[in-house]
Image 1: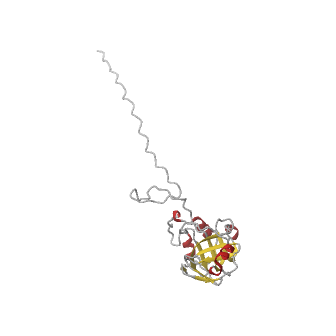
Image 2: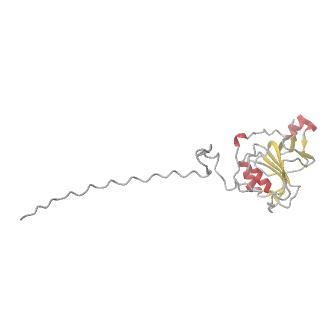
Length: 229
């Protein structure tokens, strides 16, 4: 007896598996973490990349409001004196020029700190809005209140300049910044970091008082202050 074998067809090939989902592109460097779509700034890039030095003394990234920046035109100090006479406050301190911006002007903010720059560092990591920071270090030349890192932060954050009644360091680097910087001299020694000092109070040196809100003008001929009206 002959048995017929029926040939069974092979099963059809399985379809290839679907491709894995594409990973979302990695955010560009400098984007901050966001809570989610309910956050108004969700998926909105910052105005500029985050820099390692953009931290306050407490380690928190500052809030930037560059749109609020105002620019005060720098008027030659000799012209201001000819116009205002003795109503113009003329600083008698003979400063040295360190910044790359030779003439600068802006509303005054102040910090009083003696051989300790933690408060100064925290302030310049916030928005400068075109202001000039007057730093009263009591005339000490023992430690430097300003170096290239703090000055670089001041430039990035929109400060017009700094007038330091004290010493600075990294003077060659300071000369390459688009920032007005005047100080008494240089010293390599760093200052303390305790945070001692006070912000936005009247400070006096060079026979005049610098008050927050008055307008400071500085150039190669000196430093002058126009009192607020």
